[in-house]
Amino acid sequence: MTSQAVALYVHIPYCLAKCPYCDFNSYAARVWPEDAYADALLAELAHATREGIFPRGVARSIFFGGGTPSLFAPRTIARLLDGAARELAIASDVEITLEANPGTVDEERLAGFVAAGVNRLSFGIQSFHPELLLALGRRHSVEDSLRALAAARAAGVANLSLDLIYAVPGESLDACTADVARAVDIGPEHVSAYNLTYEKGTALFRDLQEGRVDPAPEELEVAMFHLVRDRLGAAGYAQYEISNYAQPGREARHNQAYWRGTPYLGLGAGAHSFVPRDGRAVAAATSDPADGASYGTRWETLRDPNRYMESIRASGAAIASREELTRAQAMGEACWLGLRERRGLDAQQFAARFATALGDAFPHVDELLADGLVEWHEPYLRLTTQGLLVADTVFASFQ
Image (tube, rainbow, N blue to C red; front, side, top):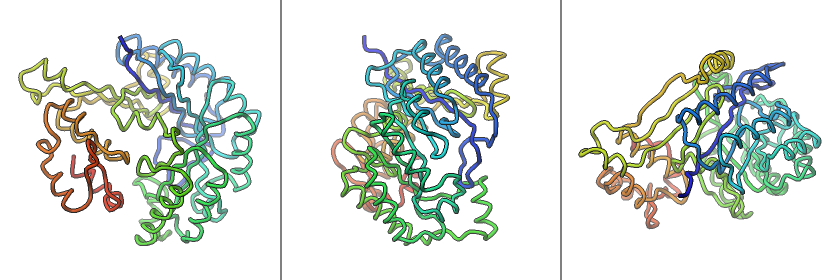
């Protein structure tokens, strides 16, 4: 019998400074309880797998996110990966990603991460323009980025991902063009290119509300989106998700696990987990598949790192909230998550999981087709170029 594929996320919430646009669960710190936090991560993993909270499947991806995971020592990352191998089967071709900030790594440190088992690095470059880094509140310099990327290659990293942010206040189309060109010249295997968003609760959102920053005009933001897409596409980076581009075979397997409903376990303060249920199993267990049976369970851990560690020490778990998905929730989420990918939503898989056709569950799909926001590429329903520009509106229509 084939073991179930699972994904493992490890959240390391500590940063040297909090970026003004960041709404992730992260905390600025000069020192951090590295060993104690790693103890808690390993205890949480053991509790989740041994108590049957999470399936002991085959991990096809492991992702260290944050925060700034590259602040932790390679020995700690090695210890965490050893712990993962005790609790889960690890695929022979597992993708192990570590997020890193330029300025926090050198060749020796990166070589240590590789020796620990990391085979993919994701660098938060954001821009190659000093004034845009300043506007984003980034602590690293352009020179830091170039040194870090070169050091990663020298350390033997063959799978590099690079993050860019565009539509930064004051950014011109020429500056965006130059950032993309610089990224292409460096030649990472993967590029994530995000338009700047003003998330509630962030310092940048407060600056926007109080008139201290002027957002990029909508028409410029749209022009930048098309420029990024066209230039990366011409350089051999296929757009496989709204903001993600990859050379052939270098798509982020871990992110695909989220979009495709694979079970994922999030360890650490404020991490999220999800275990789906197959609609066919639900239908077999009840005469009415909409009668309140769960179509999956998701939960979030305590966000404060100190409270998280205290709870883990006390009970092995630190769950702050838990939710059982209804059939309606699961169907809606399957749609908008599937539409994030450029291949689109697999209508055949949807029908098999929920025992109903996509058009019967969501009749408004015909309107989206008529409006030119989605199109069929059998068996997938996918966003059109026009739909990509209003993706959040399309997604909301399935909620």
